[in-house]
Image 1 (cartoon, rainbow, N blue to C red):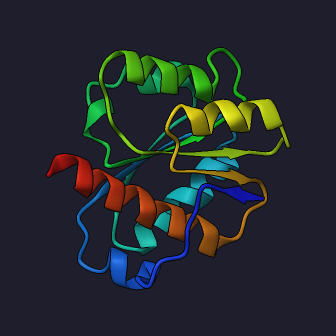
Image 2: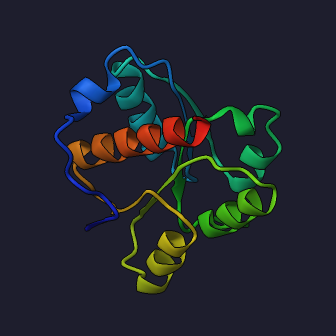
Length: 144
């Protein structure tokens, strides 16, 4: 299930061509991090992965992301916790949530908190690429 995405006339291929964006992925599942890293790099985007919320929040580069992909449920802090921390710090990094669990409450909290999209694992590659494109459009608009 995908929530928050709207179809636009601009395809993700057009949106991502020539983009020099940095995407951060925070997920406790190593295979998910590896798969997303390979996919995002194949698009010519820079990507950095983190195994936990704490690893991400302790990174000196955490605010350099143009897009943040967060797992909802992780040991320790959740993706929602990261979203709240970033909002409290005044960060406006667009967030895409991913989750293996169909958690309506978490989905509502994520979207009310300003998430660009909420994708349920396993999700289609195309849906993630559309979400990244939407996040990058959002990031560009916020910088203007």
